[in-house]
Length: 434
Length: 152
Image (tube, rainbow over all chains, first blue to last red):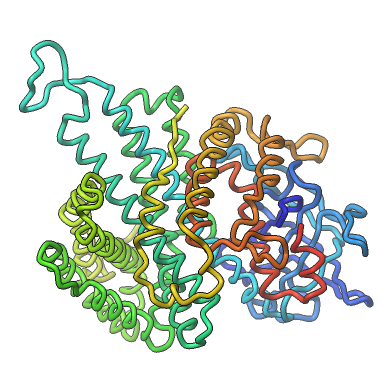
């Protein structure tokens, strides 16, 4: 916690990525209750570094007497250096770094191949329940990966805005300049692109704030029932935040490069690096495909589908606001909420009859739920903006106008995804890739 | 190199105004977390991210981490920045005060996560999983392991 030691998460092996049941690393129990861990782990972020005096690896492995598949996986704490009785750093443990990956982005981060050779480990949690313990770590981590996409989007937007204000190219329809060109921020298409970024980023930040509150409630509220309900909302939104924010991070860094033109494509401005650095975020911590499958097959069916219904009830009641100024927004919102409701029922029906339809619709469903959830966060922001308008007119005008763009130009994507999804899966599954 | 100015105003707007979650408002442990305190934290966070960490993004991109004689060497400047980063206590923002953390709610640590992601994702990743490991050990490990590993 002081940061003198650091932690890693060691799951992936050469033939075991998304499907953890294929895991090979083994753990042999010793007479003193510790285990000897042997095997190879790959793609380990910060697997080794020279920043901290010790590294605590959390490793999943199969005890020698455990069954095959995901039911035989346990979690172990394996330190790079063994820890003495008095807490000081002792002898080197049996872990070596085989190599460092050469990557497209996040090059400053050491992504390592780690070889465990009879390394001493301590079991954490219950035997064969390692994945449960690991998921505590992964669930919170997935939200943070969504936040990474948000953070990279923000810096991409800031630099695009600054560049658009200083770069002159071409004349606008209503140009007043008599000699030379207009600033590109005068051009409608550049303005559209900038507002697309801004309205997504600020909406995501507000949604994330709401989710952080829910996370705290799920961990710390004295009432068990309230804790559980918050925990359900967090579990529902985790794949949404992870995937939507990182996918939109790709869109936003891509658009930032476009606004910068040739200067964005070359290395000078550092814009292409944002695109490359963000590119890992839809991949690691469970690919966005896996997130979408997790959403439709697990989160929607857990507790007989009651979680999504509770969420729909919550956002319906919270967006029913008695204020004339917010009416145009809430009316619009109600339309998209009804689409989300229909879509959720469609998934629920199809899960019983045609799983391929659900698999083919998973990504679309995640997006519809995501765009409507961001709109829900915007409604909260709008409510505050109208109520406190006179306190800070400039700030709240900015919010209201940004929300207007989101509702007019971004939120309709929720409907497109629904239309795409209900076309079913025969268009995909019957195709012959010759 | 891209410039960055942390969106503290927008974050403070959320923290101060988006307070309609009754269940959250009932949490005892965060009643003392005032707007002034959070504003101070975010302004300090803005400084370290804008000044110290932002330049590490380009440095890391041009001088990737390398493996030499079995030892990993991080890019130039990462070690010094990491020292300052842990001295200032940024790794333990949302951890339990019982093990030396600062006990901030996740609403605040999420703002910090965002700033750090804007400044340098590569640098961020050196401490990110420590928080994950902290949570995992805190929830599932024995007290003996907790007391031995968590304070570090």
